[in-house]
Amino acid sequence: MAEPTSPPRPMRLLVDRPGAGRLINGPLATGETVAVLPAGRVSRIKSLSKNKEPVAKAAPGEDISVELEDGIALQAGDVLAPPGQTNYA
Image (cartoon, rainbow, N blue to C red):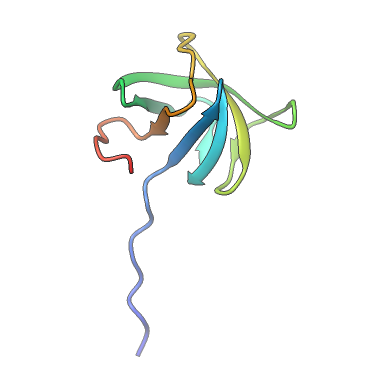
């Protein structure tokens, strides 16, 4: 009998330094709409970079720099999550 699988966890990027952090669950891609928590502001991913090189998408476990379209400055302690998410632990 096959073991039950748990549903995929929602995307989470934990910001640990200004404008960058580690993608815990994913993926994350340029153009994707995200919520910045705990503030609850919603924006779109303008660009992603890894090791100062532009990338179109990121996978879980990667350290990634993020620029949002409306210039929201990501700070250590912020979390990027899907819009509508309130539980971001």
